[in-house]
Structures are given as structure tokens and as C-alpha cells.
Image 1 (spheres, rainbow, N blue to C red):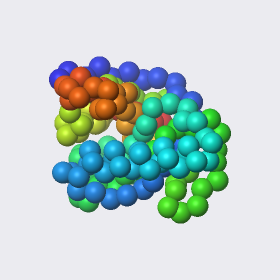
Image 2 (cartoon, rainbow, N blue to C red):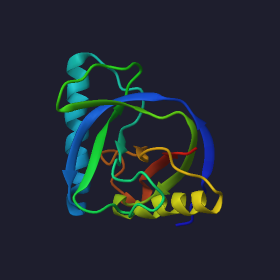
Image 3 (tube, helix red, strand yellow):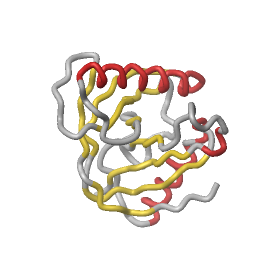
Image 4 (cartoon, rainbow, N blue to C red):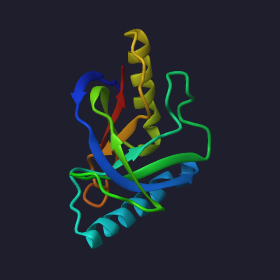
Length: 161
């Protein structure tokens, strides 16, 4: 797949989620389970997600970090929310960064997402950009509604300075 990388002006976005570790072959199942748990928690608290589900990859912070990261993968999966919320373990509250963000869209199976990260790395290296924090994924396609994995769309974003 050929990736189109764009640099956009992002806005800070609070989120809530759960942090967990998993092996690559557990990724899809663990993400689905985690997002279901977070959705249930938000529903119980009366908090409406402010967008599609996300997954932050804190193991990747620099251009020379290994992609995919060493196993087990450490991830934070959840949902953006309108306002910051207080959270107690095991819930993590955070903020996706605003400012300049390198962005690309991956279409296809989640087990090939690393190619989108590599496209972002190459673009940043070629254009003298440095990341400022961890990248994150935004899942635009719900597998329950679209069973054809080749049609799944995932945005990969990485804040830059």
C-alpha cells in the first residue's frame, strides 16, 4: 500500500482508556476486549465518546525506535472524550497532543499497521521532523459492521515538533 503523509494542525483531545500488554497475535482480540470494557465504563458514567476508538503506543517515542515495538507491546486503548475526566487505576486518563501532527491512513488488516508507522518515520526523516511523544491509531472501521478486513481504515497520527 502506498501511503500519503500529511502534516495537519491538531487540537488537544482528552481520552480515557486502559493500559495493557499483549503479544502481536493477541492484538486484535485484546483491543476489542479493552474497547468494550472502556465503552461499558463510559456508559455507566454517562460519558459519551467524542470520536472513534483510539490506541496509543507509548513504546514508540523516537524515530529510531523499533517498529513494531519489542514484545510484549504496551498499549493504551480507549476513547476520546469532550472534557478531561478524573480516573483511578486501572483507568488511564490522558490527552492526545495538539499542534503539528503527521498523519496517514492505513487500509487493511491491523497486522500490517506497522507499514503506516514506517511511512511516517520515513516522511519525518526526509523532512527534518522530530516526533514529540507517542503515536496513536484511530479506528475508523468497526469490524462488527465491516467484516472484510481489506476495507478496514485506520488513521495513524504522530505529533511532531
